[in-house]
Amino acid sequence: MWRAVGTTVGAMAIAVACEVSAVAHETPTDAEMRQAHAVLLGLAQDGTEPEREKTADIYYSIVDNPNAPRLVTRLEVSGAPCRARTISALQFPEKWATLTLGLVDLSRVAAVTAYTSVDDLIAEINPVSIDAPEAEQVVLTGKGLYCSSRLSLSGESTASDEACSDRLDLPMMDAEQKARARHALAIVANFCKAPAFQKK
Image (cartoon, rainbow, N blue to C red; front, side, top):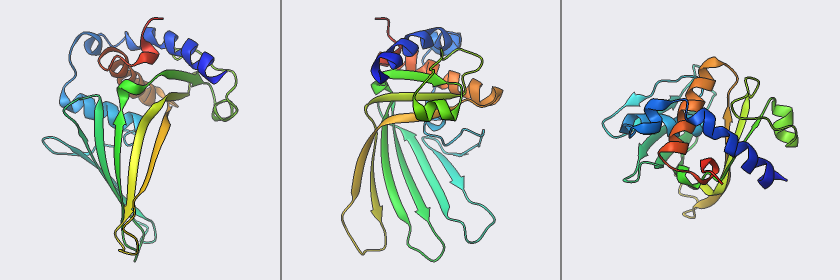
């Protein structure tokens, strides 16, 4: 069911992707590619602006509460722009930081499914067209879409914890999130040529 529904809704998403004509017919800049990766990885869902370097963007999640963990993520695109690398450092107060190295490949997106609520997403029921005004949750799936390796700096263990996820979740709760999401999806469809958006 998941694959059939994802394929159907994924095909519908072509129309949305093509709305962003500037992306559809032009090669995205390095900055645009980093922004698309950041949106799909959940780094820029609230419009957070990163610290920009020449070849990388750095996102900070640091709150005033001294007991809260601190998270810093560096994102850069690889020689193949549809692939991006992330290096994240998560540190709790008075604890050693944990490093996570990640790699995402947007050309692996094989299905896209949209839902109108978190409840429907969790239950995987009542999918809607990705361009439906009521669509608020989008799931992108593909084998090995995002892989990561985690290592603690405490020195207690030198082994890394490696894992691959076949899914990315993309919220579209308001107009700004929808605009960012659709711009990112347009890049996935028209530049990365992800299978989910190709005509069957």
